[in-house]
Image (tube, rainbow, N blue to C red; front, side):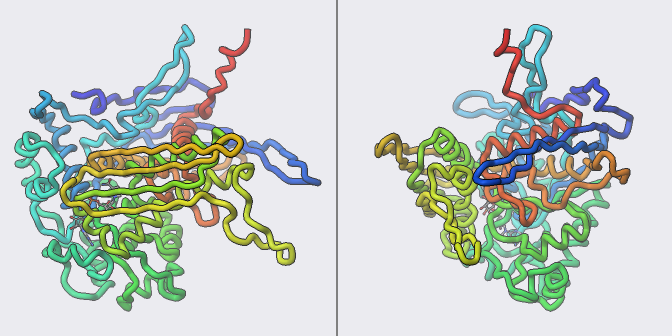
Length: 531
Ligand code: NAD
């Protein structure tokens, strides 16, 4: 068994007055430290703050199902085949020799977190998945929907992602999964070039009936496999944006009513999200469209249901959220970032249509915003209207363009070219070009796993403020802690989006550690700086 697929139950135990263990729960106490800043006469006055919280994590992981919308696509079929390969320990021949299945690319299973130092002062790291009890990917029960009715073994070969020798061996297991469940198809939302695939659709045009149908599918899947939890995951084609229309999708009640009256602007992805929310199951959106219209977020809040999104952050944007931050933090000023992509898989085919491309363009565009906002030495702040006091515009910003082209020949092997053109010392210029080539679905698939596993974990964590004498309560509905794996992170309305990959990872690590009573990361390493 490859180390990333290893099982290590209870690999960590914290011995501290802040942490207690029972058979059922891990309970921890955590001091949330911050500082409150006010400006008086041009001076920043900073007051450190501290609020203590308790976290309670249920130790028994849920028996979890993962129902994907777009099950028969490249991501869906690749995820199923690779989990089955891990589960049945299928090894295969490639031209380079024998290949073992693994979970490389999963932040949870293939990356580590520093938990302290041993007696000699050497740092100790453990897999992230060891910090709290998490579902093992091999244990996920897989299922879902697709508008294409091709059985899963055939869907895998259509995807042209995996080595032939792996496909050959895993095919019987994939065939046993059968075909995806019929899905909701509203042709207006995805590219016209997808129509030929749509041979497995739920009949009729009645959106309320479609909602009931999907809810029933979730309930039946849950009952059939005796599951505690089902994660519903959109990895279907990118849809066009839905228009936000007052009285239609701006509030929870409006949205429910718009479904009843089969309003044109309710997309399939929003219907799936509503179905999951009403069933009390987490929903994650792996594509860029605005599934989470304001009414959908309000509905999730009302039902204390968990939602996360948007759009898997696998390649170019992931690098950008590291690279742009590196430049700005180094005091270098990017003047323009120009990004070109070409790819030849079905995702690329769908994105060759203007309105679907637009969804992707929006999701890829805002990634440098917070880094620019944080450095007003390099970028001029937005103007403030002296009469009204209102902020006008967004202030200075690097030029940023994103181009995506469909080139069938390259298949799933996506190419991304980025030029970072920056101002350096005393009028100088620097140009950095990055060319990256990767197998798209093999980068995206482990992210789906991480998102599903974290979403399940979040359903088992509860919190309360120390001193309030209240019961433990679930976390807030929008799971912004999932941002590390997402291009355009959905956050609590009214709060800031963090795009920096490092900050996103720190947040997640600190949260996991807080749940076992460990203080966040310290790179101060004071003992190495003093006598
Ligand atoms: P794909 O085209 O191979 O698969 C999508 C599947 O969704 C297809 O099988 C299609 O038949 C199905 N589908 C379309 N509409 C549906 C509906 N209403 N209900 C059920 N099924 C439906 O695409 P992919 O490469 O697997 O990518 C899936 C999604 O993930 C895309 O939206 C893509 O933009 C997004 N994404 C992918 C990556 C990546 O690196 N692969 C990264 C970020 C985001």
